[in-house]
Image (cartoon, rainbow, N blue to C red):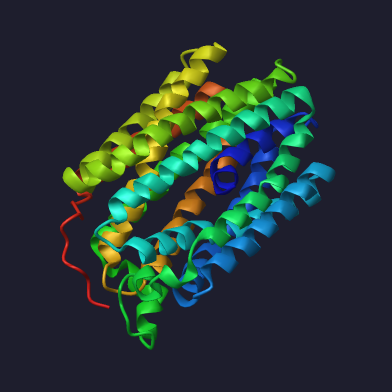
Length: 386
């Protein structure tokens, strides 16, 4: 369910809306509304996860909101309801990443966090493969609307999975970064998060990475929707499946190599494939090759999804503000992703698909250069003071 919200649902929504005559700019505006809502809620959500012990209940409530949003899009595919649904989904999904990471850290601690975070991402992607296959088949055999109702149905097993997690085994002090003084309100202040130069550099790299990455798959989906009819859902399903299979394979590897090699070398691999991917999209229009290019998407997303959380854990260890920082970073990343949707959509609408993909590739190359030159290694940093 979480994978569908963060990675898989957006491209399918783009195809669904394109079938109702929405152009690239209008789709971008609706998706941007959800992105803006999510980024506004992200930092407060991280602070809430730091403070709240009922983390499982928080996730369950948010899953319910996502199901309501998907229902609205399915039943009322006009601009107002779709935008409102995107806002609801954006706000609800803001708690997923910090809550899951907090529960994981509270269960296994910092020493085992590398491997477990990679394992989490692998299982997450494996689930997304199954969901994407199901969505593609449902869209082809039944209707595009059935894809959204499938997301609603996934809320039930998601909540059941939450109930399996033993609440009494979560160390809530460890889950927020390791500080045990709950009266330290200063450690929760947002303005104190970015005095660390390394954190600021990583923030800039992450924003540029997601600005370059976020619009690529939805734009590809809109291109596939033109002239392919109902088979476009199958093509998009193949793209998502390819990406998620690669993430499932590489995620565990990323966690282990981030422990042995360090965070920066692994991140450079993930950042390096993104500009190559953007350029390759402009060199072919064959569906099979476009799907094959998604292997690079899986490499980049798999590495970033695992190692970025490890970098934040390194930089906030001992401060008690792990989830707040994770939420703040995700807020900034959301700004890049939201702007990516509307700006790249506008470029494609006025100048064509190749111009849009090349623009995103240039941003990705700049992000790689920034990471290479200015980002230090964080693996062996001493724990910070609260």
